[in-house]
Length: 564
Image (cartoon, rainbow, N blue to C red; front, side, top):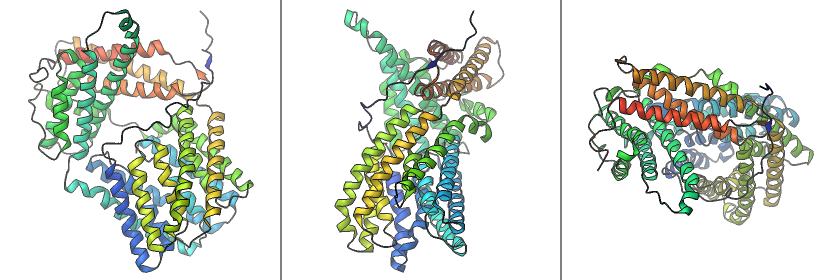
């Protein structure tokens, strides 16, 4: 047998079809949209009343933290938002101190690129979610190119901290009205995803030749639906684990997530309509639908597993992200230097454009680059149209910025380029807080920096290969196999320890979700060894079969209410 390593996968064709397709909005698009308007509006209007709108950039640093953590339960959101604010303050502090010590554009671009790389790695490692590192990179890069003295730094940081505290309050305020809102939404998504898989699994199969030819497609669709359902259930459990005390509403939500797990294990015995009905009931503010416990062990299902497994140390999570951090550092630095060489007055725009591109793999990075360029170019035209209105006075300028803040968050979940249409004029208007500028110069700089940042940033992504993506698949496969074998041993055990099978099931489900995410990320990378597709499919199928067997072993599949 040959021991030669598998040949690397060649460069794939970069997609264009579907890159600009408009999707459905997020089910909570209005929450970040309203939150950022309130978080930004109050400090900016206060500065406007005081005649110090020139300080708005520093309050924006704290205010934009309100964009984060909207999917997290409030107990976890409080911690996450606090860390986001602290991280923003640390980045701004580094940027302002650097700006006060040097005016060398070469040094400032280098520091900005390093900050962007650190921000990318930390945001991905902590999985803070959208908008990810882009806001951090935007604020810290702009701060680097703001004239500063060392004595001004404490006061400017105090403004950012005050706005950050206000953003924290804005982010936490909805919890007073709907304290279990995020967990309810996560549970509803799990129920809907399980219902979708159940519907696909029990759909009647035609016997015609045409339907036979289409069966591979249908089978692939079911596999995707099952993977999506497993991911939604896993996300629901994570949301419930983060809530702290197990109150009665949380216990009721746990029982509903159990029903979603049962549907994935026994779709033929599931009533999808019942699952969707429960999901609809969770969308409002009424009581959580009451469901009888699945078994005596139902109250412990998944909880002990999550606590026993814990979270991987941050250092372990940062290791696989090194190629992405290197891409970000190199791409941002080169984009900034090319912009400087072209004589553009705001090289940090090119730096931020490059930083915004980097996704989990090259294919997604390419798609984000296309979306960024299209959105920015349309946004520049929108800026030209709104400039006469914004130049009516400082109040009009602030109100226009708030409108674009709302528009960006309302549209960005449908497609990134739609959000960029509003982000671009907002960023251009923010530069005028210190005084109105010539629109033609701003527009030219923005267009040049957008093109430069996108081209140079993508070139850096191609240059820095991510060979670790293949290694991560092997690790994920080994993890799934170990978890499956452990679960299988407990299934056949005569009397497993209390909660042991539940714990094993949760670990196996988490491993399967991680495997699918790892494979999807690696599939879009270039110049790496081929993805072991057959081994991945086998691991997923046997893993899900083991999960289903574990459900039956616990007697959970025969519950009243899972079948009409």
